[in-house]
Amino acid sequence: MEPLAAAAAESPDGAAAPRERGWLRILAALGLFLLVPEVALRVLFPMEQTILLVGPAIGVCALVAWIQGGRAWLALTWLALSAWMLVRPLTAATPFEFMASGWAIVLVTMFGIACLVGGRRIFFSRALSAVAATFVFAGAVILVSDVSPGRVERTLSDELDRRSAPWNAQMQATTQSPEWQSFATQNPRFASMVEQGLATWNELPDLTVSFFPALLALESMAALALAWGLFHRISRTRIGPPLSRLRDFRFGDQLVWGLLVGIVMVVIPSLSALRSLGLNLIVFFGALYLLRGLGVLAWFVAERRLALAVLTLLALLFMPAFGLLALGIGLGDVWIDWRGRVRQLT
Image 1: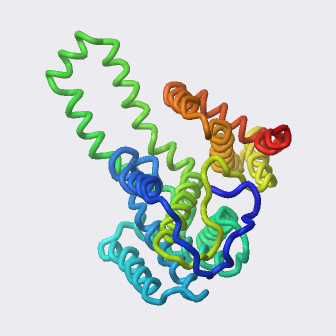
Image 2: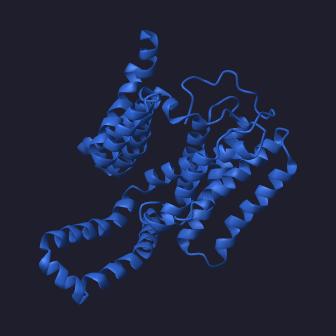
Image 3: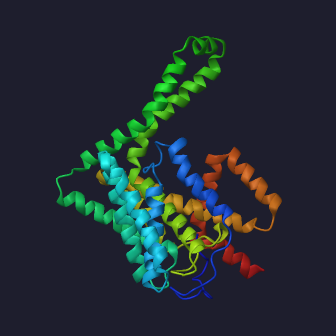
């Protein structure tokens, strides 16, 4: 999350500063980020072992801090841990695991470069640049090698099928048991709902493959944000402005063109060959603007606990509609600047 304006009153890059305060929220976020892909949403997260993104990213932050005058022992410790995390799975790795480790290595390298040459740029700009550069690098590798996009897609599909297989086998055994058959006969409406849920679950791997680039980019941004926040709590060496609260989250308005380009690719028939790219642009930039809309809503209810509780309840009860509302508010913030306008009025 980024400040509304470029951070003024921040200590220079590499300067010693007090550690970021507050471990509870970031540790809770880290726990969810590490555990949810392993337990509940294995077919939605591109990289199941998210520690492969977070750990090396902390190592790169420590290396950048060392270059800028930070502690050598911290950098060497995290670099050793990062190398162990990335190399250990390769002893008996599947093709997807090779791809995942390669993505993590290139991503954190690009992020380190962005931090070294980024000057006073905020975290969001550095992370977005690193993700974009990693995609460019991956595309170049595919172009110059004998690896076709179809082969990459098959590798992704095989990996997601592997992840969903245990759950599918368990549910198949359950629904074919005599107890379930008897229950379904007595409760046909509930059984129909379960069957619809299973059908949706079975479609998720194909959906994830279709939106894999966008989901991978979002997962990578989240991992870099967690690593950035954790590093500035571990170390007193500042390598850039800290993450701010959700209610202050915003980014350059020019990114709306990414969303508009995606929409154009989808709706114009003559650009049907670019439809998949367009859908991924819509998902990625749409998620960013949805988060920006949530930031606007959080800003308005920041000092009103009852309103925040009601807003959270509405979000849980009416998630699709609430998501569309947040997306609309986030997009509207490009032209209206809700928070700035309220400040002017008050």
